[in-house]
Length: 142
Image (cartoon, rainbow, N blue to C red; front, top):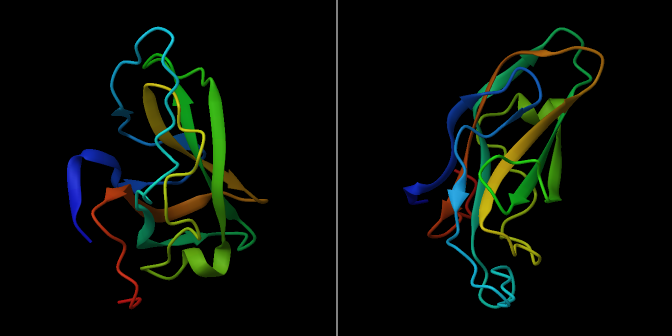
């Protein structure tokens, strides 16, 4: 996988509670009256991967990842698209990926970021995610 710093949402970002990605991507201004949706057409690879094993006290936590979109960089947000949920067992494995590999339809606003939602009876004490738009997603699971 090849990451480009300008298309990186999270770079080994520690996730111990629900939080937004450390970076947002500016998809460029939208001209008045123009309708844009970058999702349709040729697939745009999006990689969300565990790079440090997660740990928690309760072992029932999950991590849901959503793509948030906004017309400004303040992120109210205007739109949120759920990409997938990772179980606690899979979060303990370095290399686990969110089961969603492309930018979805409906990405039609100027700014994009990811939002990580932690659910369960406890909190994570360790765990990191790297996520971004990539040149391609490696498929041999190594």
